[in-house]
Length: 556
Image 1 (tube, rainbow, N blue to C red):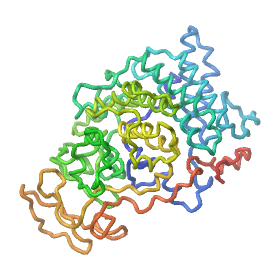
Image 2 (cartoon, rainbow, N blue to C red):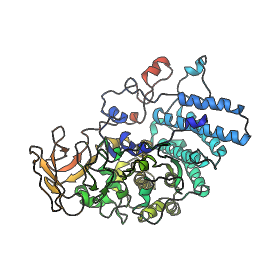
Image 3 (cartoon, rainbow, N blue to C red):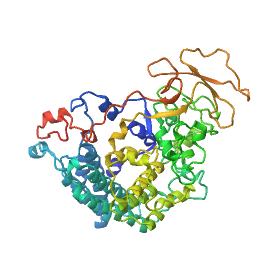
Image 4 (cartoon, helix red, strand yellow):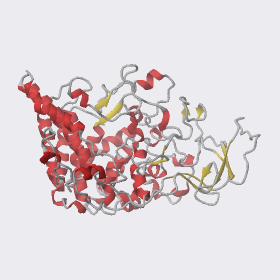
């Protein structure tokens, strides 16, 4: 019961974290820590004050210091010790991601323990070694067969795979921490633990042979416990543990998907969308033609029917993309429950750990180690493509110039394959909250300087957004007035009018050019200072109390 109080796993809010953590997958009109840092003239430990909290760690260590008093068999004791050490590893991995070097504590600190209270940072390498010692103990001792919703062996191994891949690639692509020589150690752990799950976990990609819906089913299910792909679900039940779901992810609250993410999806024949000569000026309806089916299970597409109108939508029926300044014009349906029954969305489960992650982690780790084969691709990436009805990925595909431009620090002989595995990861986990950590570990922070853009319009006038060939909206110049009597289209439906103009004007929608171009979401994302902004400073108040907590990597 003590350990159950330490349970804290991602839930419904993850569907917005590609926006709230600042990535190239989504725009966000609200404040985010990284956006504020990038726009600030002098971010410092006085202005960045989050993340230095240790109460959770004390609870874990308190358990580990006292659990041996329990009257239980050795295997039961070891199981719960393993669960506690798993939670300690999770806690510390989050600290390492944020601060790099942090003080390691594996005991409860008392008020008289001055040496411990005033110690400085321990080196990242030492802390990470301790993290993986905890994880290995947990992997060896946490039982595989546990009650629904409890941490089991496969949960531990999946997190171990995730953290090993993170640390291995971070060391490889971040020369500033001078740990490149040990990158392969963690990539090998990621490879081996992923393979252990693949060989012994009994999981499988959810695939009923319906590429137009199987993927989307994972994100609107009332029962993920019985789904063969789910390693761990955040389980919800109406009036018992409500999901906390509401329609913010679809409407115009703060977050909206980007054109850059949409353009990453392949064509149905496996070719790059951006290899088309006119890809930059394709209209909204054209953008969804002959695309990876996962796109239309992630983005609201032409002809999609809205049922759950909620707070931020403009009415039910065939949805007409709502445009608004500071939003891209794209709408997210991944994680959106298109049902008006509150019992349904209170009880929707969240797929916290999916077997798809294990497969892609295995493929990426082997590629980064230079060991990947076609057999490896066929049992990982291509299993996911089979669900989507997409052509298989082959070794050493033609390089995509767009991917090469995003990741110029990839120099491996398997470069083009690594880039395509990264694409597959982006698509498979789009808008699930993975993207920020991926960009950080790949040393790709500069990507975040590019402001997300939205739909393209070649000029003023009437446009079809539902794909039926009948106009739905009208774009007017910012100087014009929306008429009181609105024109009706062929269906007898009144057209929706928008005044478009530059940012900082009183237009309804901001646009990049002179009455033509891309919808603009934000004016400026600022500058990503490399390598400083991959890390955060220790808050100044804590350094004042303990001067041994010196700042590193350019922070003050």
